[in-house]
Image (cartoon, rainbow, N blue to C red; front, side):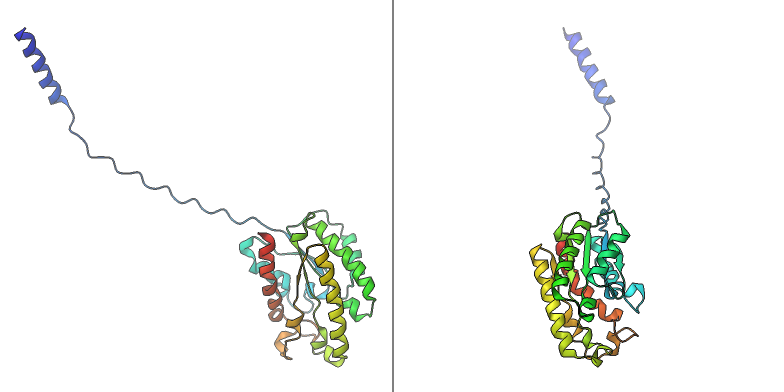
Length: 238
C-alpha cells in the first residue's frame, strides 16, 4: 500500500514538471477596418423648358439645371437630360416631347415654361390647359411621383437690358398672371413651385447678371435660381 502511494506521488511530480509555463494572455484582436460608406444613389434628372433651361447665350456649365445638379451631388443628382429650346411655348414643348419619344423615367423632373406664351400674347386660358397637361407629362416622366417634380416660375424679362425698351409695367403684370396660373396648377397636383421671379426683378441693372445678348441671364445670375431650388430638391429626395 505504501509502495503504491509512493508511485502515485512520483507520477504527480513528473506530470507537474512536464506542465508548460502559463503563457501571457493573447492580445485583443484589432478592431475591424471601417467599411467604406456606399456612394449615394444616383438620381437621374430631366429638365423641360425653353431658353432659360437650355441656357441661351451662356456655356452649358452655366445652365441653372446643371448648376443645381452640381450643388445636389451629395444627393446623387446627375447632370440633367434637357428637352428645351429658345422660343418654345407650352404647345411647342409638348410637340418636342412627343417627338423625342423618351421611354425612360427619372428620379427628378423640372419644368420652366411660359415666357414665350406671354411674349407672343397667347391666351392665358391656353397656357393653363397646356401647362396642366405638361405637369401630367412631367409626373409621368417621374414615374407617377408628383413629389419628384418641381416648377420654376417665369422670369420678368422686362427687367433685362433688352426688355427695358418695352413696357415694363405690362410685362410685369402679365408675368404675374402667368405665374399665378402655374402656381395654382402645381398646387392642384402637389408639385413644388419655386418662385425665382423676384430674383430677376432685383438685378439692379448689373451687367454681370445678364448674358451677352442682353435678354437672357448669366451663369452668375442663374446660380441664384439653382440655390433657391436646392432645398426644395433635397426635400423631394428625402
